[in-house]
Length: 165
Image (cartoon, rainbow, N blue to C red; front, side):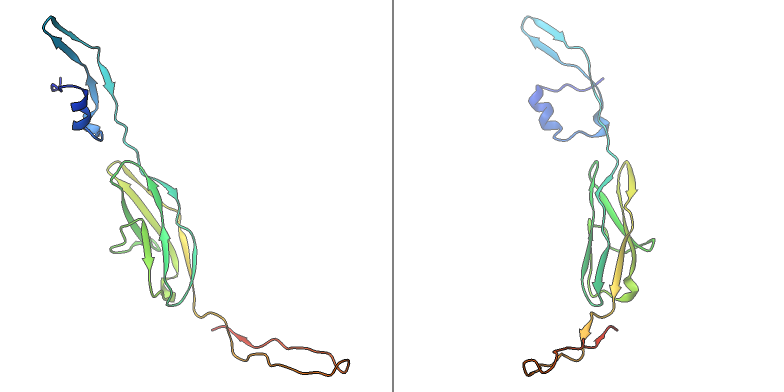
C-alpha cells in the first residue's frame, strides 16, 4: 500500500504542501529490539478548492488619454491563472490579477471581466464598466473683477461659459 517513511519529520519535509495524489490511508509502524506494532489507518483527504472571486473588479470612469486599472482578488487551490476580456473577447497578454490600461481612448469604453482558473475549474467575475469621457470641462471665459459704489447698485456675476466637448 505505500512507502516507508522514516519519522514524522521526514513526512513533513517530503510534503510541505499536500497534493491530491497524496490522498489515501496512512499507518505507522513502530519497531524496536523487542518487536513492532502497527497503528490503525488514518485517512488523508486532500480537498481541491475551486477558484473563487473574493473582490470583484469595479466600474471606472476616466478621461481620454488617461490610465486606469481593474483588479480582482481570488482564492482557491494554487496556481491560479487569469484572463481578462473586453466586451466578451479575451485581451491578449492580460493574464494577471491587475489589468492596467494606459492612454485610454473612447473605443476602449465597455465591459471588462476576468476569468480565474486553476486545475479544478474556473469562475468569471461580474462585468466592470469603463466609461471614457472625451474632454474634461473647461472654462473658456473667466469672470472679471468689478468695483461698485456702496448702495448704488447690486453686485452680480453671470456664470462663465462652460464648454464640454
